[in-house]
Length: 90
Image (cartoon, rainbow, N blue to C red; front, top):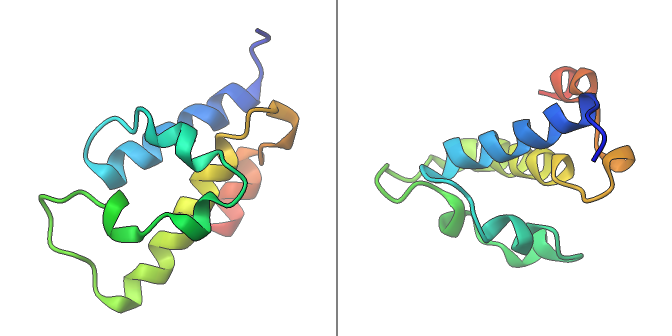
């Protein structure tokens, strides 16, 4: 394993999911990496169940953040976005 800035990007993706879920994402990461994962995953299954559900206005924002986090977890480090790209889009 080679340590590059893309390792930090992966960690950012894991941390983002952990904050949204309220727990370590564990097996959920492998589920997200399947080709059609974002279409199959429901937001309610990802969100921290101890918190109130977000208003519909914030659902779209959370879905975008989940897409960024999923891109950060790409198995191929060269296919992950850079932190600069993530910063600009968020």
